[in-house]
Image 1 (cartoon, chains in turn blue, orange):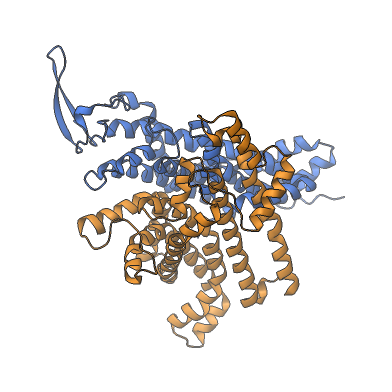
Image 2 (cartoon, chains in turn brown, blue; image 1 turned 45 degrees about the vertical axis):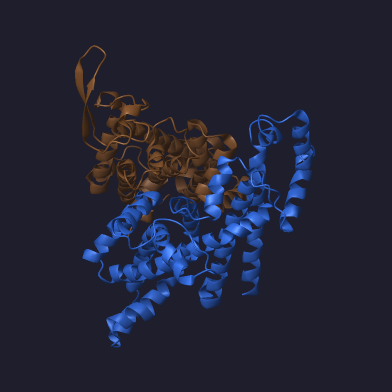
Length: 310
Length: 313
C-alpha cells in the first residue's frame, strides 16, 4: 500500500488536524463582530461581579416612601442621627420603592448565569449523546427519533411545561431552558461525527486497534469543538432571552430575585405612567443578547467555515 | 411520487409518538405525588385517593399511557383542574384569537420580509442590505414583549392611533377585529420578518449566481422580471421551509404577545394554566401546538414535492 502525501493538505488529513493553530486565534481576534461582542460581554461580566460597588443599594430593599419614582429623581434622606444623604434613583423606583438601577445591575448576574449554564449543560449533554449516536448505528436510530420528537415541541413551550412541573427556581429554570436546546447539539455533533469518522486519521486509529471511546475522545471530539463553540454561543443568547420571557410571564425565577424579566414584569402594571421600568431592563436584555449573537456570528465566520454567513 | 408521500407521512408517526410520550411523561416527572399536587395542600387523604383513581394513577404506567392516548384521539384531553371544564371545550373557546393572531402575523411577515429580502439581495452590499442585516440581528435580540410595549407606547399611548390592548371577535365586527390585531401582529412579526428576510436574501443571492439567471438577462429580460420570475421562484423552497420552521418561534411568541396585549387566546391560557399548575391544560396545549407544527411542516414538504419534482428523493 502506498500512502499518498503529495500535498500539504493530504498530509494534515492523514495525521489529523494540528492541535495548536495560531492562525485561527488571529483570525478570530481580527473579526470585528467577535471583538465588539466580546468587549460588551466582558463589560457585562465585570458589571455582574462588581455589582455591589457600582453605586447600588440592596436590590431587594423595599421602601414605601419612594414608590414609583421617575428616573433621575433625587431625594434627601435624613437618617435617625440627623445625618443627611442624597439618594438618586438613576432608573427610578418601582411600585414597591425598590431602586430599579440596583435591580438591573444585579439582574445581570442571573441572566449571565442562566445563559452560560444553559449553554454548558446542553452542549455537554448534546456532545455526549451526539458522539455516541454518530458512532453506534443502533443508538443512532433510537436517539435521533427521540431528538426529532423533542424538536417538534416549540422550545419555549417545552421550557414552560418543564418549569410548571419542576417548579420555578433557578436550577429547574436553567434545566428547563437547557432541555429543548439539547437536540440541536446532538444533531450538530452527530452530523460532524458522521463526516469525521470517514477521515483517514480515524481509520488509522481504528487500524492500530485504538478502543472506540478513546477514538471518540481523542480524535473525534476535538474536531467538533469549533462548531460546538459557535452553537453554544447562540444557545447562550437564546437562553438569556427565554429566561427573560419566562420571568416576564411570571412563571420563571421567583419575583423576589432581581432578574431583568422580573423587573419588567413588575413594570407592567404602571407601564402607561412609568414606562422606564420596562425600558431599562429591556435595553439591557437586548444589548446583552445582541452582543452574544454578534460574538456567535463572528465565531461562526472564523471557526466554522462550512456555514459561513452569506 | 407516491412512495415519497407515503415515506414522508410514515416519518411523522414516530415524531408524533415521541411528542405524545414526552408530554405524557411530563406530569409523571413531577416531584412527589401528582395527585397530591393536584389536590392542593388542604386536601384530605380520601380526596387525593379519589383524584388518583380518577386520573388512573393507580394503574401501571404503560396502561395509563394507552388510556390517555386513546382518549386524546377521541378528543378527550381530560378536565381542567382550575377551570373545572373539559380541556377540549376550553381550547375551543380560546383558539380563535390565537389563530387570528398567527394568521395575520404570517401574512404580514411574508408581505414585509420577502420583498425586503429580494431587494437586499438585488442590491447586495448596499444601504438597504446592510440595514436589513442589522435589523435582523436586532430582531433576534430584542425580546418580543419589549417590542410590544414599545409599539404600545408609541402608537397607543403617545399618538392614540391604535388600541392599547384587548381583542374583538371576528364575528362581532371585522373592522374592530383587524384594528385590535394591528399592534400584536406587528410585534409578533418582527422576529419572523428578521428570519424570513434573512433567508430570502441569502437564497436569492445564491440563485442569482446561477447560469440561467445570466441567460435570462442575456435574452433581454428586465432586471425586475429576472428577479421575480426566475430568482425568487427558484429561491422559494428554502424561504417556504424557513416559514414552516419559524412556526415554532411564532408559537413561542404567541404566548408572550397574548400576555402583553391581553388577548384571551391559547397563549394566555398557557400562562394561566402554569400559574394554576393546571397540568391537563398544559399537556393539551403543548400537544396541540406541537402537532400543528409538525402537520404544517409536513404539508409544506408535500407541497414542494408537488410543485417541484426535483425534491422527491
